[in-house]
Image (cartoon, rainbow, N blue to C red; front, side):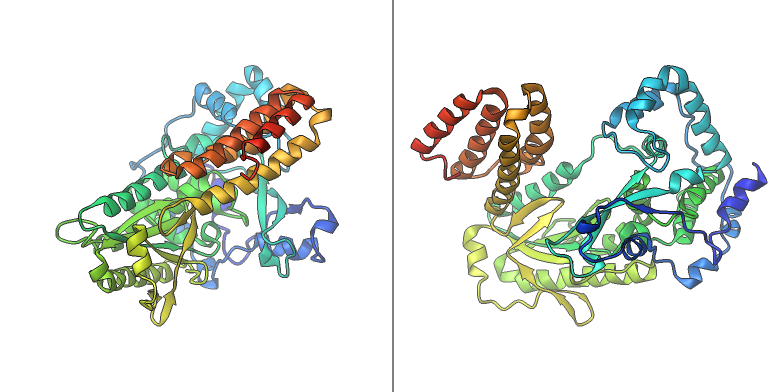
Length: 469
């Protein structure tokens, strides 16, 4: 292995050199904040002084050459990874997906050589760590830099390499939500009509706050080879923006993998939800839940609190900050049982000593709004608002678009909203289903019918009483 590779990754300490970040935004969109202020906020990685002093080369010496290694990249891997992306956004190198896709017959085998050299030498190209940041408002009128979130536009080739090394098949937000909602429904439909106490943890700047030295040691304990550890070390070094990367969620999953050992201590002798605390991990989202009868509710809250405090202690030990203000708690159950909880004056779930997370009536979980009775009305309301805004836009530009373009816009702006995790709430009421059906029908008319036909359809819809949806 070249000495330069080791030099590149062991200078992560006090002499860390931040990658140049550029901020793409019109000044009127920044609401008085300067690009430097936003850039500093987005680029900040929560690395402690003690972490900067860690000798990463010493950690590397603990790795075994014979551990788990990444297989060689093939031409087929590159083709599939490139085809996965459709966005034409460009990173700092200015190369969009279309250029690489059209050049694959010529450049494909060169990319295979480049990617394999990166993996075997343990060096992640430094230029691929730079990103263009685009600020998006969390609130209509931001008052602090925290009211903005960023989209990181990385080099397309870096995303291809990360996709090849970090892709996970057949697992999505819908998979995780289906598991949770089916457990809730099973509890509601049981003879005891169980309540489900649920807690969603929020870690501040989760991807950016992980301790590189701890992550590398965890990789070694899990049996990864020296070459893999070296490559990950290179990937993390001199990088001040991990959010937006493909590998970020996978590395975070590895980082918090041993948290499952902590939560395993809250598994009851029977392994049932009524005597245990179950958990779901998806990227940086950790959710725990348990089930109880209404008579044993306080016992269940105490069980959840004990598990939450254990998670908080683990987070502190692993240099992660639990944001108690954004951590959410809710109790799911049948309409009858949830109504009976009114007036019980439950303190909430104690996530840290003396710090309680109050119970709320609805939460947004992985992009889906879940209410305590699983009526799905807040979710359908949220989808309808997004769909109606998109339909208004389609209608406004109808005269200057053809059917082919309207189909593309409909898929990106409307169908994506109607389809997202739709399997999770298939049990909506007839009234809510009618609302969604009316919006889907209106979309088809906007795409396929001529202007006069659309107006005729809307008139019929109004007469049928569907316009209120």
